[in-house]
Length: 220
Image (cartoon, rainbow, N blue to C red; front, side):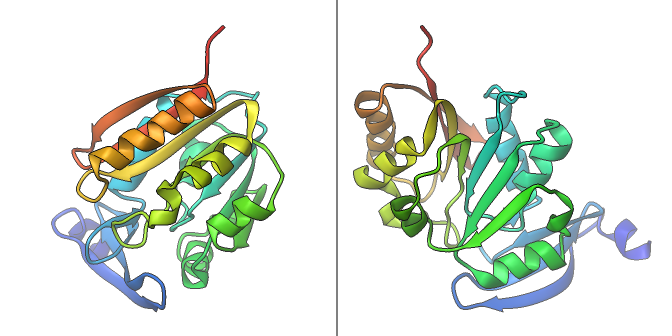
């Protein structure tokens, strides 16, 4: 109880973990709630949760969303957001390359309570390349520290993402302003729009740090 009260004054470090992929990972208590952070960015349950909440508000989250693909799990805060803030009961498949991250999500944030949830330890590019399943919603949140690996900005990867959407599927692609070149951001949007005929718009400077690419079917 005392720690929780103190966390409203200053963040409290609860745990440190070392990941071969993401480096030092911190569990902090901030304003009474645990968050997952690195030295340079929030990974889950802090500003990132607010950012993706804004993206989900821009979509249509209803009973027609039967299944969700999450590329990049982190601590799993977007799973909590879908279940608790949007009453989404869809089956969620989460792809995460870092086994330490998966352990943290399950152990420190009790993510297993949000069934139906299937976590796949895999490289997201390999998952997209080898899979055929289509999803009503895809959330792309693929960072190593504060940078999206270059392969996930390439045209062939954008094509794979598009091919995994159902005919009425929607997609959120999270980017960080300071590490995403404007030309790359434009290229991603252009690929979704011209090659796959989606409506594409940007939510700029969400929480003053990130820009979300919002991809939806064209209105007829």
